[in-house]
Length: 248
Image 1 (cartoon, rainbow, N blue to C red):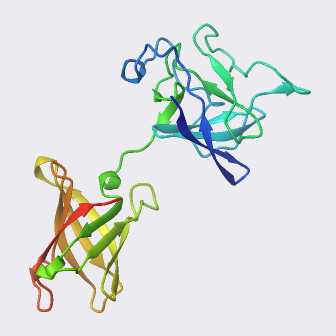
Image 2 (tube, rainbow, N blue to C red):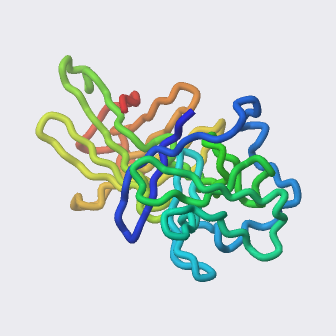
Image 3 (cartoon, one colour):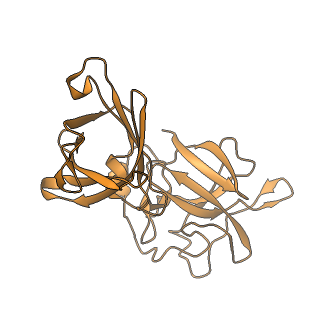
């Protein structure tokens, strides 16, 4: 199976596809988190941001499950040589593999899952060890949400696009539009009961600043915005409840 990968070379982003590894019989769930004496992840194969380590330049490998900074495969002339193995690593278990990445100039030295993954790393569906991506409360919210026939009016569509966080898990914003109205929200998310998320839709560009409240219901994958209240009090100029369904 193929997986989508992203290689960062000197601040130039290239979208690529990584060939999958593995024997096809071991599932990713069986491999995830396997350690088998590999110990800590060596510095040469590290978490982003990527740079130079032990004299080796690093490049970013990324797929759907995580990422890793890895050295490009070393060569003598046009002939590839074995991938570097850090001093003290168990060469019977630590198996970096020179892997050709589609559309990439040079193949990368990626750690295969065959001997297990170092601590803090997991085995990706691609067959390589990666550092898992940080999980954020906004993960299930990012995307485009829509209400059809909003406010009880046929043909009125309200669209809400929640953008990915810009600072770790913080800095979540959204754009709302209907008819000729366009609004921008800062999205504040806190855990609630039953796996639900409490949402504040904060409009910092309004005068005065205000927020509506709502919830995300994971069991139905629905997002609610209550327009009947502003700043926790009955709203003097908006009413109704928007129940968004995810469309993208």
